[in-house]
Image (tube, rainbow, N blue to C red; front, side, top):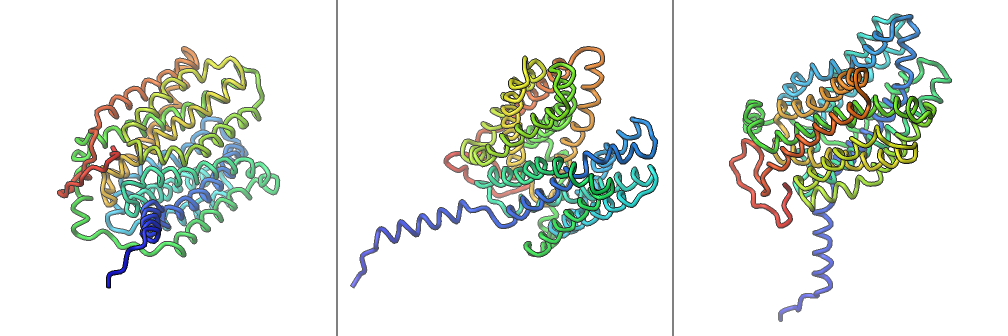
Length: 422
């Protein structure tokens, strides 16, 4: 006797299977939590670091050198971090990077000379490079293509929320002691490493077959239009969103709009909140509307709004523009990282480090060029140059194929899904 299938049961099973397919892996949530710990600790320390360095009686240039030293060393050590990724599991390398950064940050708090602060701050950049490359590889390794947009949005959201809370908490903790924020940051980094150690399974170094992908030359990846578009978008985002905007907006608020420094913090906080609220929708759109669509949308928004930021007629108008800009930059960044995951195997350390270096170099060089432009021209011109970079990145995104392709170095062709991921 044949049993008649229960359509309601079959419907529940299909719904459960669909829900499982749409569920983000645990590793993504862990990386998001770790990102929150790192960002809140960094935000606590960052307002204190210039004052701490200045206490040794050095010039403003040397203070700026301390602030930039981590980014400079991080940029220089990215190739080494990428090479280590081919020999060490990403979870283990991420833990090592966090612990190294925790040690160097604590030593800054114990330093009794400017040279000590500079050296330990710079060495922390190597730990930051290790974590940056390995955490990206960890997410790329466990997340299927149809969830990569949401995964990148979630991990980015951890950094955004931590970055919002950190500076305000740093002001309170500095009242305890000027050394205390550094020790607090070191503790948050140790907590981040402990979370990864406890909740993530050990990861093995790449196999011989996987190393074949990691041994591809960077030129092999650069020949792929998807990789070029990802690099260009990350460079433009680093230049304009993380570099020039942080330079121009405070000056514009004080010198043009006549507001206080505190209002600059309000503007950035509101923009970060808008970005955090839109991240789930942004991630969904990257997965369902496609990488190229969201790259073009993000580039369009950042191009137009970025050019208007330094022309805002009032403080409320500036806040609105910054909120819209933050959403556009988030869309462009999430889509660029998802497209990178589609293009680059998780073991390709050289390609992952190149992507990180593109963003870091834009963040370092952008403010320097913008500052020189402001001295001879104006703030709108400085912001306009960043908009030009987004136009160039958008043009490269337009040239990305409309169909889903396998990663570089893969022989297996993957059928394109109905909605497309590219």
